[in-house]
Length: 382
Length: 256
View 1: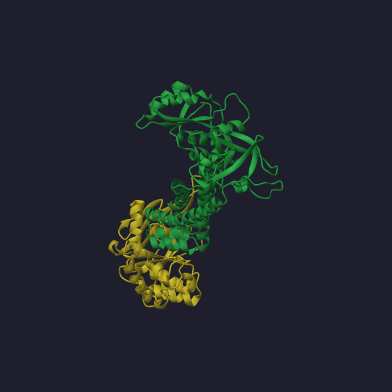
View 2 (view 1 turned 45 degrees about the vertical axis):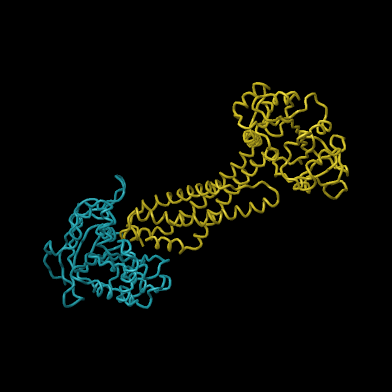
């Protein structure tokens, strides 16, 4: 009887394609919007991951995300270095600053100052120049991947800034001595690396300038014990890379409304899918009601009819889901190529499959109620 | 002119209804579709049920075939009390013992003639190859050996009804229930269908109940029951030697 069920399904091509299209659209919307949301979430931690050479970040407890600068006193570095279990501790400066390109184009950048001696916290991959070039006079590094769009001169320069160019940060001359391969960041502002001391000279003069202290644990040191000691000693928060990434993601998702917007879009995809698939499948059932009645009259039990309906729904769900996920991933590839946020870990197809399963079970259940309630005597109604 | 004939003995009876009623609607709007039917259909008999629209013919065959519950009274079919069976048992019983021929054929449009005919066997878990082979054989019996792979939409009305007859007979049911089998067909095709029905389905073990308005096919009946307003008002038998001559058998129905 399963072959009969499949032939019934495929017999009405228009409805069959309509069902698949509805499910595919829902799967695409759910997976694509979720992937964008995950992409954004991952991008929020880009700076931390690019800079992740330490085990712990010491910061003001009020820091809510990676670009949230609550200055610390410089003495915190020494306090951290003197804490048992700490192998090394280096200062890190990070701040939004105003800048101006050679042709006068104004822009805001994220200035990162690395410890002069060790340059710990530098991005892992250089594209042009060497990391040690930062020690050259007024040297800074730019992101090779995004400089084309983020460092484009718009006041007559007609090109993006590149290695060798000079520009000004807070009216101080900066010289681009190299470029690195950075991760795509949630923040639009370009990230410019320099040394800690030069960053302080670029930035406006506050009494406290230190943003973070990056701490490396000594071999064999217990992270939790060291963390508690650091917190006690400095009165500040000590967070791991993952914790820092997490609070950053939480803050941005919750405070910017991104979660609400994308969550709504995912729900919308689910609702549209449920509506389209449910309605189309219900119509398909209604159109076939006489045939289900005939089968019932001929001795097909409600259980057999239920299995037939579920098979029909499962086939539609499988095809629709595969097409939808394919389309979602394809669109994602296009989006990734254009630099927009998109990431599809395995959990997204899995969750989408579950959502489509729920949509289809719902559609089958609505139809099944109608088929179960059907009196086989309907077959005698001309 | 009618002549009287005797009542059958219980062992000769395939269907026995006594005081059978069927009520539709609630307290205020209740309507009796059957108002106390007394009817016997013998083994090997072709019984026609005739009467005006809405008189209860279709309700009666629905109850006899076990696809509709009677409200009261006795309905014994092939030795079983249909009203006493639970729904699952009745569904199984129907699949094993009843064959259906519908006015609108009710063939599944996406299935070939062979696949349509095979359905009653597939319902009974017959392996698909065996079911299809039996279906092809049955189609050959109804003269459609050349159209086994045709879809219903590719067949004429008469051919579709032949497929429906093949489907009704393929699992060797003991009772065949036909609802207006010729009403959608022209006279000649209708006649051919009835000839076929009579030829392939007549056996001492199998009975036929045919609901019809079509007076042109009365000659194929062994007996004809006239129903009006939920009651059998008259039963006549065909003369064994002269199909156009009818014999009165009396009215067995009563008011509830």
